[in-house]
Length: 373
Image (cartoon, rainbow, N blue to C red; front, side, top):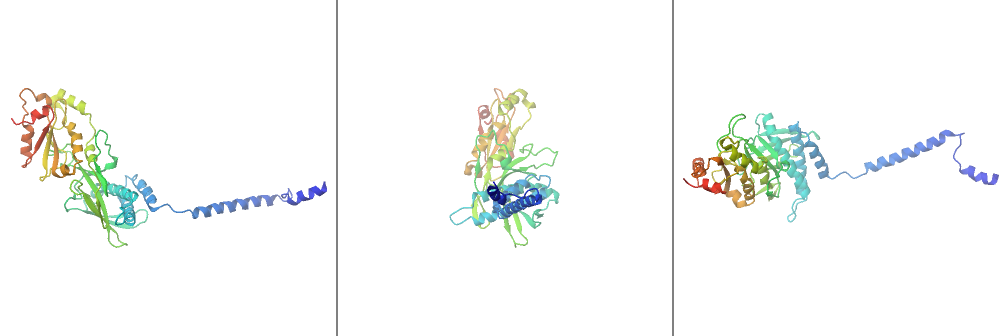
């Protein structure tokens, strides 16, 4: 028995006579394990720059109460994305999709902050934005005056196109490329005043594409924000490369709001002159003298909104976008009888509104209304 007990005692752990040795051993083992984990975490590879920038932009988009801080973060993200775009581009390979998508998103968010920045800084056209993360100050200038560019204060509100509900539109008319797709809201009348003739009650909804260019010395970067008209501009230069200009034409049409066209047509017939809504010619975009007006006239049990899908689908044709502007004509269908008193009204409104030629398209009863007296 003693011969067998000797080997066991030789390998046995300390007994009650030495209680502290066991505890110290376990503590040391635990410390070595934690130190190894901490060392492993420090050696883990950092997240790619685009991933870090995407997280930062997502956080900035939630800071709606601080437009200046939000704009500074969006500007920093757009600059990083533009740098990554330049790295991944070659003579035969376009910029990486991830970098372009992040750049477009940051440019759209930056443009959406522009009206608030202008109101806060007394209608300025240049702003100093300090990055809350790095503390670096950047100068943002809003370019205007060139062909196809909107002035800085032209819109009272700018909406990000990707956040607009397009449900109800048959076609999603967009164009891939570089730039943040937004919708500019233009109201000619001051708040509380009636809108001018031919202008919607809530103002125009205009497709716009925001592009940010970076220049200047490294220590004092200068950024230039351009608000481009995608119906006139097909390509733009970002950095030193000419690229297609992104656009979202359907977002502008959807930004007018959703309506139940069938119900509105029934109300238009039942209420007659008391119907709320546009009467007479109404422009869907600001009037441009160089474009051909095309007026759509609705029929019985209908309203001017019935042409929304037609006008939206026609925007898919680049030639029509460039040459034509779409109008609608609203009227009370209860007034139209055997001898329509509104016959010739669209033509009369057209001649009174613009000196150039125009075209009318009527549906059902609308064809009768559009005929000359």
